[in-house]
Image 1 (spheres, rainbow, N blue to C red):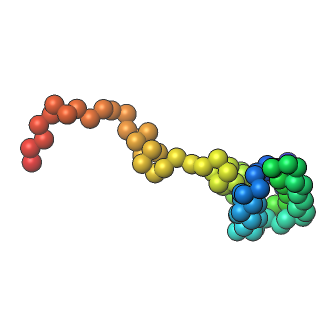
Image 2 (spheres, helix red, strand yellow):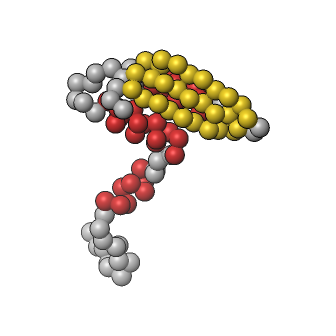
Image 3 (cartoon, rainbow, N blue to C red):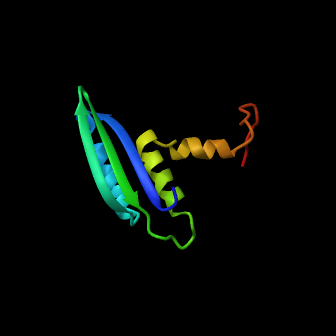
Amino acid sequence: MGSALEIVLTCGLDNQFVFYEIIKILHEEGVEVVSANFQALGDSIFHIVHAQMKESADGFGAAKVTERLDRFINGSKSELELDSELWDFAICPDINWEF
C-alpha cells in the first residue's frame, strides 16, 4: 500500500535462511525495515515484516521489490525456459542444413 510494505512469510524450522534473505533483498533495494516479528508454532515459523519504501525515481520501486521477493520465494524459470518461450516455431529435423 503506497510506500508501506507488509511481508508475511511462513516457513519450516529448517528454512530460517529465507527470512535473512528477505531482509537482505529489502536492504539491497533501499527499503527501511520498520519492524520484524516471528512466532514459532509446531514445525512452522511465521514471520511478519513491516517496511517503508523510499520514493523511487521511476515510481516502480514497490513493484520491483515485490517482483524480486516473489522470484526469490517462488523461484523463477531458468534462462533456457524463458528463451524458448520467445520462439514461435518448431525446429524440423527433416531439413538438411548444409553450409
